[in-house]
Amino acid sequence: MTITGLPRAALLSIVMLSVSSTLAAQTYRTNTVGDMSDRVSRIIQTNSAGDIVHVINPATNEVAGVIEGIPHNHGAVLHADGTYYYITNEHDQTVDVVDTRTLKIVKSIPLAANPNNLSGSDLARKVYVAISGAPLVQVIDMDSNEVIKNVPVSGGVHNTFVTPDGKFAAAGMIGASTISVIDTSTDEVAWEIELDGGVRPFTFETWPDGSTKRIFAQITGWHGFYVIDWDKRELVEKITPPVRPVAEMVADGIQNAPSHGAVVLPDQSALWISSRATASIYGWSLPDLEYIGHVEVGNPAWLTAAPDSRHIYIGVASHNETAVVDVKDLEIVRRIPVGQAPKRIYTAVFPAGWDEFSENSPAGDND
Image (cartoon, rainbow, N blue to C red; front, side, top):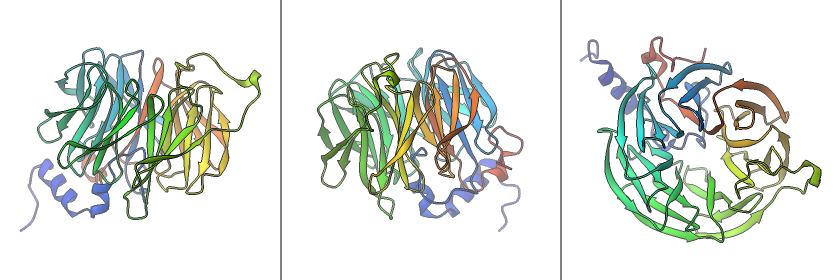
């Protein structure tokens, strides 16, 4: 039997089934693991004060396309098959589904209340939406693009992040100061940890087999991050960057969150965080958490890593740009003009073989 003449969607499904199980584990694409140098990727820069989203090609550091018509866009995530971007729309209280080839909105999924961030599990083929306006996480099925479950938690949710193995979705709350960990196979809360401040962005470190080792969480009022042992389910350390002179400190735009943005590099070599308090990003080596250094970028919001683990992309809200930092040389190598007040930023890594099916789409290959 040959596959000639099969529909495009069927061909893509066959390719996906033939990919090794490690691909299914690579769900949190701002924290993917392993070699992804041959994979198509895009940096998705949302712009919180506008209605456009910029799609950046990390191979060229050029804007590859613009998604229009999503006011007060917040977070973004990629469909398991690479066919759609899911983007939270705070103005309309929806998740807008965007075709990755045409960059057009094909559906708007109504939500229970105002959303913040969202994250996806390729393993479970689900999207987990942080609902800030209600104490719950809403679960969207990637095959039907419908909400299939509401998961009650203890407060309004600021962020959801799926673990790199796709098995859990962690929901962080500011008001309730809690991280609730949801089992993606059952969509039930498996365990929780209460902290001494509101939970802002966080990221994961993994063991060699891809399972979760530690959470690095940023907390309201803390300049730095908390280290949470995943297996012990407890806070084990609080880390802050070296003290800087008062003259170098920044008060504008902190919003009780001096640190707001964190990423573990795909090769698991380092953790990087953003600092609103010093207009910089800071790095620590892994697994020993030895301080690496810092790079001043402007008022940083979120940050994400390119698949090469060499470059970090930062939404610089004060400059309306995305800054590209070489983490080996500790220097900015590019500033890319984007929209109004860029904040949340996300690395979309497409399935293996995606370039064979992309034709001349904005998601095309990296060459």
